[in-house]
Length: 142
Image 1 (cartoon, one colour):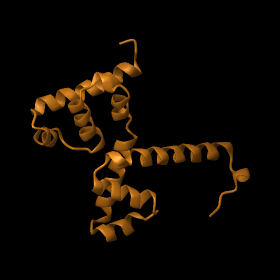
Image 2 (tube, one colour):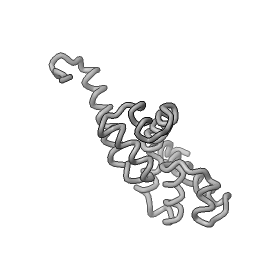
Image 3 (spheres, one colour):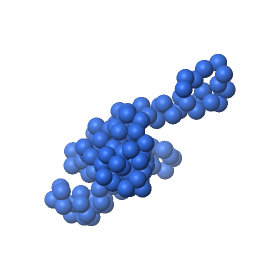
Image 4 (cartoon, one colour):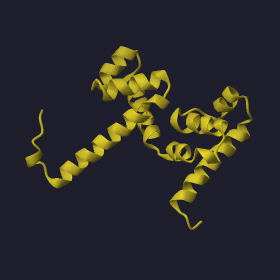
């Protein structure tokens, strides 16, 4: 179906622009995902496949596919990791890897600690450092 821009209200046009911006942000950040998550997102966004079609192709249940796609989208639209990247001079390479794994890949603190061979509490401290830094940028009076 082709949309006639002249028949759209200004609110509808604004909504479409916001939606397109979100899709562009998802595509731009997809490289941060694991291969499996990137494939799910590409099937959903690029090919326009329905959740049921994706479930059939991946042999997952439709509810699992729907939940994973929703979580992937939520993680990619969260700007916390982007804030850390823009201020990378305040974080070590390991801290950036931890924030990526936690906020983008959605890994648990336990798994991150095993993968990076560091303590669980170091992972939690890094996550809290990233959150605190983002909060300080949002509210400069604190």
